[in-house]
Structure formats: structure tokens, C-alpha cells
Length: 291
Image (tube, rainbow, N blue to C red; front, side, top):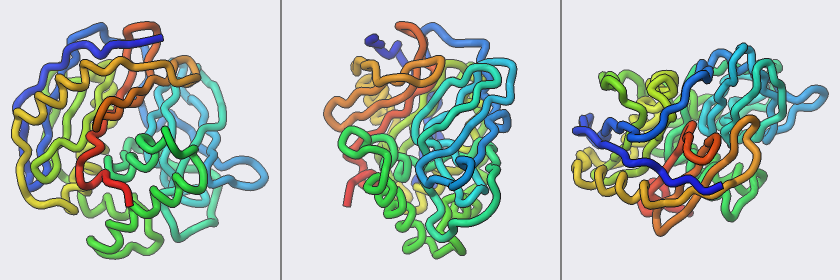
């Protein structure tokens, strides 16, 4: 399966210090009939002995449910982030890959809360974009912790080094979605860092506040420089030239991914032309550079 991303229309950006958010519209076939509600993702630790890189997720909906890479889960033995997107069948229960986003705790209950909070681009980059060279495991986990450690050192420590704690200080960006909007491109410190594209406006609506809060957190590590619209439009044009290759099973969907130059893309899709979700990163952005 090879998918070409349809044309993207980019609107005028809105800046808040070093954060600039550009609305995106997808000019192509949308997708319907999916449940995007984060609260319908029931999450638990593995029975018997919890495993850092694995969680059990269950679809509590009567419709296919989207669980996204980058979704943050609070509770359990430690706060986690879903590492790979999946489309769950109604009432389906399965093990998914995860990474820890809370370095200082390994105890607690079994259940997690899923509330639509999202990992920031700089942290998810250690989860997604490095997958070409790192399996989800010890090396990738330490990379995620290293990236969260930048918040600890530059913004101040939290009780258990949890990304969710840092997000609490970066909420409240006063921006609403535009009619029909199904994606965003994010600029930080005067440059595009990446973007997220959804197969329907409902998908963006379900993760909207989480995306803004995560981007605002990253912007606290960058200079207060707005990102020009021309850079966002160039990023969108580059994105539509990248052919997405089949990356394997994603429940009722298939994983898709591609890398071209400094642009890396991953997500899930169904059929040959129906995108459910894509995450794109500009690998050359300062916040995404590897140690």
C-alpha cells in the first residue's frame, strides 16, 4: 500500500510568543464512523507484573476507536505515552507499545486516565521519528526521559519528573478551531517543528486542547520568535510530496510512514487513500536534534 497525501490548505497563523499555530484543511476524502473520544480508551497495566513498555487498552465504544501515538495516560504504575497508533475494533482489548513519561515512580494501581492530553513534539520525536533506528525499548525509553529532562532542568523540577506535571504550567492558549479544520502546523521559535493531520475535523477536535498545551510547553524552551506563514506553506507542500509506505498492522488500520530529507511522517490509514492520522516532524528543528 502506498498513499499520497492529498493537497493541504494552510491558513493564517496565530502567534503566542514563540508558538505559532497554523490551521490546515485536508483536500481529500475524509473518514467517518470512528470514535475519537479519549475517555473511551480504557487502559490497564499488564496482569501479574506491569511492564514499562506495554499496556493493555480496551475499546469501550460500539464503534471503531482511535488510540493515537502521543496520547498521554495518567496513573497506573507510572504515567505513559502510547508509542504506536491503532484502530481498535468495538470492544476489542489488546496489548500496545508504550513509553514512560514519568521517571520517578514505579508503583500504584492498574488503571490509567486518558483525557486527550498529548506528548509534545520534542518528546514524541524520541518515540516516533527515531523508530527507524531504535526499537521501542531501553534506548528509545532513555531518549524520551532525556527529552523530558530538558523541562526539568530549564523549567524547574517536578515531584516525579512527569511530563504531565510540566503540561499543567503550559495550559490555556486562547485559540479555537476554524470551521472544517482537520489539522495544524506548529511553529516554535521562528521555525516549523511539525504538524498533525486528521482524517476528519472530529479527530482534531478530540485532541485539540492536548495539541495546543503540548506545543505551548515546547515553546517555553525556544526564543519568542513568531514563525512566518511562508515556512508553514512550504512545509505543507513538502508533506504532500512524500509517498507513505505500509508500516505494518495497526488493528483495523495499517501503519504508514516515510522519511524524505529532514521530513519524517508516520500515522495510520485505511484503504489506499483514507488517512486517519498523520504526525510530521522537521528533523532539523533545534528541539528535535539528538544528543
